[in-house]
Length: 273
Image (cartoon, rainbow, N blue to C red):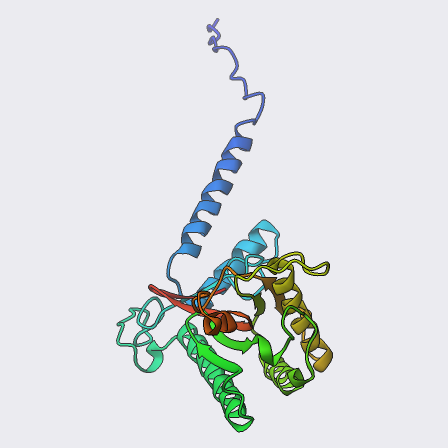
């Protein structure tokens, strides 16, 4: 009789597959890491949008909106000569000419041209109506500032608009209605204390003036979107002149309208706020 072969103990399959859970978590974390690294790098805008959509589909979430990080209000564009710029072959030769001017640069330059046009329009109105002593415009990297002296809007120590304010409010409202940028309206006073029942301090007075002017803009132009606007009082703490002289105190009593830029030039990128 032939001897039967003795087999070893039967191989037992692993009872569980618990290792799959940490493994899948690790893969998810790695994918998220690569996505973050991708978002922080200088990339072509079109490819970034496609990649974002692909990740959104993979995770079952929406990646819509104007930027790589929707909800934070940020969209990053490569500067001319970087990323997808250059001669169109993806090398980014950085010559800054022709196709090297990317969407970010065009957005910044287009907005700057719009603000310059608004400033010219406002300056022309100021000159025509002899308001140079009451209004002034300034264009900076923060945006277009329209500065209005107290005497053109309010009586001393009050937040009630004077009749002469109708030379200013409808014009400013019309300019603001033609653009989509954010608008910050701020009230400012001198350092002379005020202590009335209605305005216990300069904080209340400056805040009330900013709010009053903002409401007057809305009343003047119904097409203005209130979501774009904010009002703030700075009291005496943002002077533009010395409070040691009467002329300086007169200059410090003012209302400012800041049309904030949506795009700013930054090192290597143009960032939409």
